[in-house]
Image (cartoon, rainbow, N blue to C red):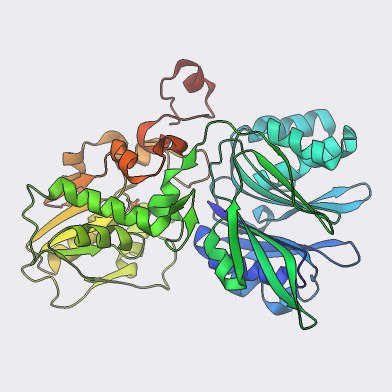
Length: 478
Ligand code: AMP
């Protein structure tokens, strides 16, 4: 998973991009970067491993100033974890280093296209990263096939399979384009800004999530359409070059877990969807769990806060907070071995003293992937002397890996791919366990038919294994 943002036609666009990236830091903490076109027409960049506040500092951006900039925060789903895979990428053209690209998603025919460029056209790749592939494909069509930039991007878009929300700088133009299914979020905003004491009104902002806009004073305009290519050129109106939409496949996990709750994603208010999920989970319990005013409903902070709140508000119980989260502990999910993941959870959460004694607790989390987090937390709450622990999950069972930009372990590591709900309940040592049902998203989302639920129902639009696509039988990898 990653996040992108771009700003067009605003002084010090690089600084504003860094600020917008800070607002979507949750989408990637491994590395980040900014590419900028300066007033002399050069494209330069700064990127590095680490967080936005440490890498994209005013000192580091001092030599990279301009009014067209794009940026990226990375959370690796494919490719090595090192600086060479950080984005944006700059593809050098014979006339100069004139294309900068960053992208959020996963290209499932990455190796096929890369091998074609390497073997047939002598391209050399520096990274294992899909952003670089996109830049090199555009460069290929532009230079070798002598296409216009608009046609080169249109052709590139049609060659790629999978998920991509992409920003590209070429000369004094910026392009924003998205895959035809619209897997990852991508929004467009407008920025009024002051220059020389005057209010200017032609700045354009793109970002993965609308929560990036407030920090720079931008206003949300709309989402990009699936398959849309937008072109910005100084002095000209924003132009939609084309829209090659196919059936929508928005990632429902963005609403369940990934996106920030203060955003507007896929035409939904994220916090509102989470509260509705919580209310739905309470419906399952209404008749049979005996939830009353003495029951404590609490979240595994912070990603499930709104789900727990929705549950509590629908029920006679109170929302409370019995676990404290240490915000200085990084991602435990991506640690390479189970021992480190277990330790990470212990460092991350701590129960409040005397809070749980004798209480019936409804413990809400957004998802169970390997089962690491909840097993540790249930044990923690049990040793704090809770009387009963009922775990409720804001997503259906995760039974398949994601190929469209979310970092999920292989299928055999997913606890729900091999265990029943009762077996998972015993594994996490809870008194009861319930998940959201996939069908119930029909009543929660405005248009559930527009969403991808493949990690919950294995209905992949594209899968890297052709076998699955041809036979419609889940393949080895999923
Ligand atoms: P696990 O401990 O393996 O069962 O993972 C579930 C926990 O990790 C939940 O509390 C989620 O908030 C979080 N989580 C779920 N999916 C992801 C992901 N793709 N990346 C990072 N964290 C995740």
